[in-house]
Length: 275
Image 1: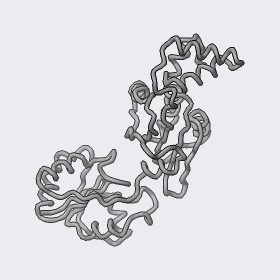
Image 2: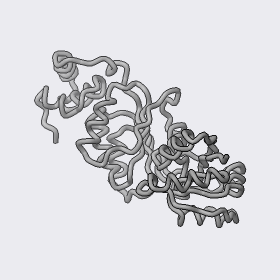
Image 3: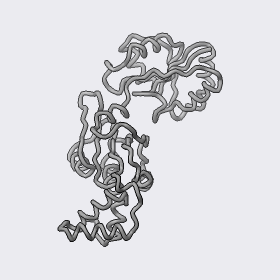
């Protein structure tokens, strides 16, 4: 009875593939790949000639029987286009089916954009919450962010380059101007990690063409934001900051960051124009 290997592959730099991963890819009877064209390039680079079959989001259920049949005869390696298969990539259903059929499922660790961005972010790494890919629709993205507004652990999410500015806008308006790290093109020639506040990140990326895979790391809620603030406290804190000389709009932004309230709600409650 064969083993299903979950083989992590490079997210950019091909030197990051492990010796164990190369051995498993050579010795497996079949490689199930998210994109066979992409995986063929990797295999050609390392002179590996194992048979390939496609296994991607839109055929993953139809391909289960084929892969399980291959597992009955030998080992199968599952790979995604980059990084660890099954993490925001097809794989969960196959892992579940293989386990239910009595097969061993073995991870072959390796490159990970999630962990790479997290440990290089400069933000706390002792505990974190992975949000997956942020929702495409503005309203869904804002709803998700609002649901973790009081989460004290570091947040990590993937995002597409063409939605990065919208995501950073919603992070600032929903969570406050928190510290973030935006990691782009990790391990590749044009790798970039921006570290700063969400507003500064938006201003930085608004001035350039945004290309490549994006991982966003977001600081967790400040301690004061972990307990709900009521309307009275929000109004009082904005008023206190204004009396101390802060502009009302800036005071509202600061209170949103401290309280976990969405910035728009603080603006509305304290009659600040969102310009």
